Each structure stands twice: as structure tokens, then as C-alpha cells.
Image (cartoon, rainbow over the protein chains, first blue to last red):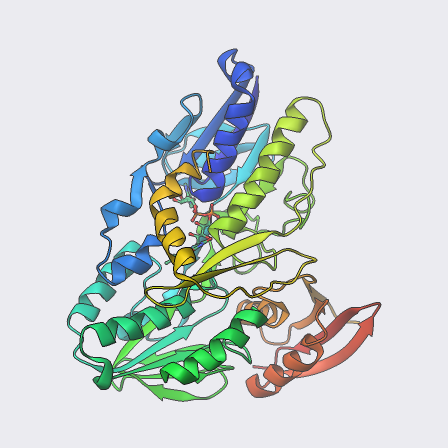
Length: 379
Length: 76
Ligand SMILES: Cc1cc2nc3c(=O)[nH]c(=O)nc-3n(C[C@H](O)[C@H](O)[C@H](O)COP(=O)(O)OP(=O)(O)OC[C@H]3O[C@@H](n4cnc5c(N)ncnc54)[C@H](O)[C@@H]3O)c2cc1C
């Protein structure tokens, strides 16, 4: 019997499991193949909802479902935290000592916001990239009476559009609460324009002017002084704030470090086309966990999952597993509380801007509710 | 020649070569030299601009068959 072990039951891992299961149902039923998903959480969490949790438009329960309900019933689910991958033994060793052996390992452990990487941030600022963080920010926004809101962005981070979306949304939110006159919104970005995607930056620049959003480019947050309410960049600029909302730098997961599979940031060196961990034939990596220079987004994990699943099926049927990933990424972008746009690109095709419309916004909202069809392998 | 850490950011539109360099600089020790590979002509300009602001050093900046290669040393 062949064994596929998928470490991580988020977007990427779940799609791979369900797609392989759908194509190899006979082998699974005949016990010629076993697929195991390892996840440290009983629930599958749809992270984009945290943005709306911060504004009290959605509660956390609406953003989760039991992973067991989403997985094909022939896929095994092992709940627990993985301690390390033992490549010599071809096994994942769990924290409780359980050993789960594999023929093929798929690593989809995602990434982690690391507020501790910025001195003082945990004391002086808020984040909305985790459930806990979004709930604390919800409280802070609820009590907000006006002032200077600074949105700051560290490198690297997942979901490259969320910082801009939050910035637009928080300004409209303040206006809607009658606090528009008493609120200043400030946005900082690490490089020399408002967004890494040039068309998005070009689109956002006049919108910032029109809406009176102050921006500071080449600003990489380095320290926060919680008592004086200031934030300083590594480029040497200091800003005052009343409410600080940070998208902190991210790292890969600790299990990658403990396994010796990653670089200093726990990112795994991954072949950009084959999605195998560099130097290996039996380990695939996808989603936020790779070191690839592409957006860390659910859509990236989804497109990569299609490639990984096809290659696994192909390999198990005696093929060479040579289907290639072309770097495809697709993202919706909320441009306020009523309009949205989208952007798409791959390694060889640059992104092209699209006019924001209410239709796209409605679709994004609908997708937030339909998301569950994605890991289930339907959408 | 001392060890150079290659950052292969060819075809990277988002986050893009400069953000990949910032990520590398954040996580590697002072003294490390990076070589960023980029297929975007803008990198030959915006990488040096950030490097000057952040207090690091441009070691080399060249083009090789449409690929821009910028070497940067982390100084602090
Ligand atoms: C606020 C916010 C808004 C976002 N908006 C968008 C958006 O609009 N569009 C978009 O495309 N993307 C968006 N994203 C990004 C998207 O959620 C991630 O990029 C995506 O989830 C990455 O998928 P993944 O499979 O790589 O990792 P994840 O989905 O994060 O899954 C990783 C899994 O690994 C498990 N795991 C990790 N370590 C261990 C261990 N040691 N043992 C066992 N299990 C482990 C975790 O529990 C988790 O289940 C957003 C993210 C946030 C936070």
C-alpha cells in the first residue's frame, strides 16, 4: 500500500487530499492507497474572514467548519501537532511520539504572523491576521473615539491585498460611525510605492489623495514605543499614532525549523515549477510554506494544489510527475465597503488592472460564504 | 569569492524582488551578501534606492540576458 501524508489541513493541504481522493477512490477503497491529513486544529479556518471580524461584520464561528466534514470520507484525519519530519525514516513524528510514515509527503503548514519580530508591537499595536488578534482589534475599534490610525506593513506577509483593504475599510468605517472628521488614516508600505503590484499601486495613489489617506513609503516597521505611541522604521522615520494596526512580518512554522527543512525564516526551498522541496523527489511543498517569490494567498495555495494533486495521481499510476506550476495567482481586492476589483498574473504574465465594480464586491462577499466548496474540491 | 545568497525573484510581480531582498536581509546575519535575480528592469533602480535608505551596500549591479542581478551586502 502507498501512503500519502499531508502535513497541514488548511487551504492547500485539504484541496490536495480531496483531489487525489476523488481521482483515486478505487485505490483508496481497495486499500492500495492511504491518504492522511495531519492538522493541529479540529476546525478548518477561513482566514480572510478575520478582516470582517475586526469590523464586527462576522463572528469567528462563521469562519470555521470541522475539517472532518470537508475532507473526503476516505481520507484519514490525524489531529495533533507535528513535532518534526524525519526524512531518513520517511515519517512525520508527532508531539506525542506517534510516527506516521509516508511514501510521499506534502507540506502545507502555512505561515505565521510574528509580531514579536517588531520590538514593542505586542504591547503597542493590534493585528487582525489571527482570530485572537482580530477580536482584540474589534474591541479597540468599538471603543475608538477618533484619532490617528496607522496601518503598517512588515515583510514578508501573506495576503498582499489585506493591508490596503483594511486601510480603505477602516476609513469608511470611521465615516459611517460619524468619526470621519476626527479620524486620520495613515498607511505605511515597505517599498517605494503603495503596493508591490504596480497596477494596484498606480490605481491606489490617486485614490489615497482623493480620500485624504496619508502614506509613507520605504517604511519597514522596526520598533514600537507603546508608552509614547510612536512607531519607527528601519529607514529611520518615526510616526505618532493613536491606534496602530500592523501586518507583522511572517515566518514559516516552527516544525519546519525543528525538521531542518527550512532557511532562517523557516521557509522551505521549493522548485518553482515542480513544487518539490529542492533536492528531493518525495516531498511536495505548497502554499505559504514555500520560499517562492509569489504572493502568499489562498488562491496561490489552490492553484499549486491542483498541480501537486495531479502529480501525485500521475506518479502513483506510474508516470513521472512532471506537470508544472506556472506561478498563477488570483486575488480579489476590496476597494472600500461597496466596490471591489481583482488581479491575476503568473511568472510570465504581469498583472493588468481592472475597474472596481459593485458586482465584483458582491461576488467576493458571496465567495466568502461559498469558500467551503473550494477545499471540498467543487469550486 | 565569499559566499553569496542568491534570491531568485525572476517573474515575481508580487511581492517582487525588493520585498524578497528585504525578507532576506531581515532574516540573515550582518555581513551576508545577497544577489537578487530579477526580470524587472525597475529592480536595478528601486533596490539601490532602498539599500541607500536602509544603510546597506550595493556590491554590483549588472544585466545578463534580460535578467538583472543586484548584489547587496547587509551592513547593520
Ligand atoms: C486576514 C486575512 C485575509 C486573507 N485574505 C485572503 C484573500 O482575500 N485571498 C486569498 O487568496 N488569501 C487570503 N489570505 C491568505 C490565505 O488565508 C493563506 O495564504 C492561505 O490560507 C495559505 O494556505 P496554506 O494551505 O498554505 O496554509 P494554511 O491555510 O494557513 O494552513 C496551514 C495548516 O497547517 C496546520 N499546521 C501548521 N503547523 C502544524 C503542525 N506543526 N502540526 C500540525 N498542523 C500544523 C495549521 O493548523 C493549518 O491548518 C488571507 C489571510 C488573512 C490572515
